[in-house]
Image (cartoon, rainbow, N blue to C red; front, side):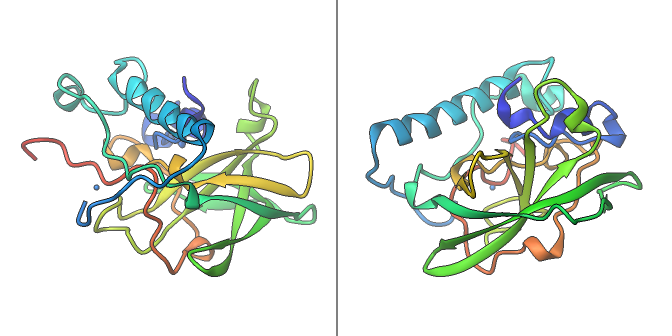
Amino acid sequence: MTKATTYLVLAVILLSAGCKEKKKYHDVRKDKAIEAPTDALADILKFQKELNQEFKDPEESPLPDRYRKNFETLDFFAPDTTYVVDAKFVRTPESLPFLMPTTTDRTSKEVVYGIVHFELNGKQRQLEVYQNEELMKKEGYLDYLFLPFTDETNDTETYAGGRYIDLRIPDSDVIRIDFNKAYNPYCAYNKKYSCPIVPGVNALDTEVRAGVKAFAPEGK
């Protein structure tokens, strides 16, 4: 299971009660890859490769069999390191747990673990990052953070409901966010899943032309 599969782990287990919130969880303009250090580009390409492998795997893929059998690759924006940002990470230890709505009648118990402050597309932004009380009890997820967001590409180039990014609690007050690793919730591919709905506070008033695009299977 890739790191992208992360947040989905908790939700996906429940099928209609859980939507894999991993990075797994459509192009009008022609994109050009941005010049960047080899290691940064390699990391993005590795993410894309692992996500594609996951979607091909019948044990992990959220795709219905009719789409998975001929699946080759998801549609990604070209790697662009201007969408890799080092954000100021402000923890919010006094935050109380709340129930985050999902695409079904299920709710997901979350807490605002912190707020990230960063510059993107020439403007200062901020987003809330969440921690799930149940997921953090699972092995390997103690330091896992969930970053859902919407942006101005939604419902045109990307999934209408927004996208997710997986993060880990940093050791300092700086956290790196790579929007090239933004992925769709599972319910973007299969209606049997239940996915957390992006809180309105995490709406970015800009285009995030990085990460996974909307899913448009051939023949659909």
